[in-house]
Length: 268
Ligand SMILES: [Zn+2]
Image 1 (cartoon, rainbow, N blue to C red):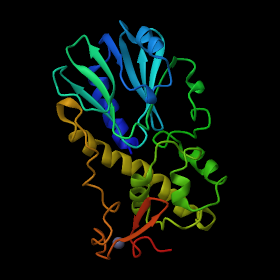
Image 2 (image 1 turned 135 degrees about the horizontal axis):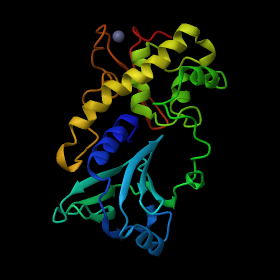
Image 3 (image 1 turned 180 degrees about the vertical axis):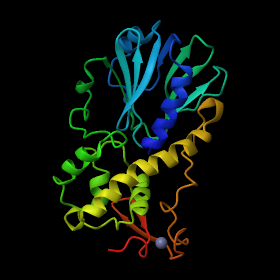
Image 4 (image 1 turned 120 degrees about the vertical axis):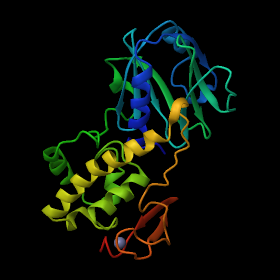
């Protein structure tokens, strides 16, 4: 699932290339992912220019010169491609935008769980989940973080992946953040002291700053991106040695969600 480092790397890639580029043709290929009709999608996007691409939580927001925004939540398996039109199309290519610079921007989604919206730029709140999202985990101030965290009482990993607390953190980076903060994922917020909370806040910013350039490096010229995460220190490394202390990394699976942590570095 794309999380903040993935989406920030994609956003950076697109902002170097898309602003000022015109959409010559907009293809609506697999209807199930669209939350707009084919005719609205085609008529709103055709002939307009891209502005800057922004992000809020797990949503990418493509601003358009018409004043509309193309909003995409890639969910579990959504991927973007920035290729020449002759590049072979993946069967699950949901959307293809032919661009005035000779490239094609595609959205491919193996499990078709992502969602594509087109809304007026000042009506982002109409997109489901938008209104209930907490502040973005990348931009939240320490003051706001400290204030919000007091409203949550459960286990801290559950809290980190809850978009109502903070938007943009998923299962993989929650593990990395907790490892960086030396906090056990199943500790409750009510068991954290001021020091723990300060380390947790710092670990969020540090983890994203470390991971985003590593993700960006893998994208190359075509936004080819397989969600490689071989640089992660703890997530999906169950059974390997902790890179800090050498203890065998623990792995617990609950509700299809894998949690990895080090019992020595992250004591309960
Ligand atoms: Zn360790």
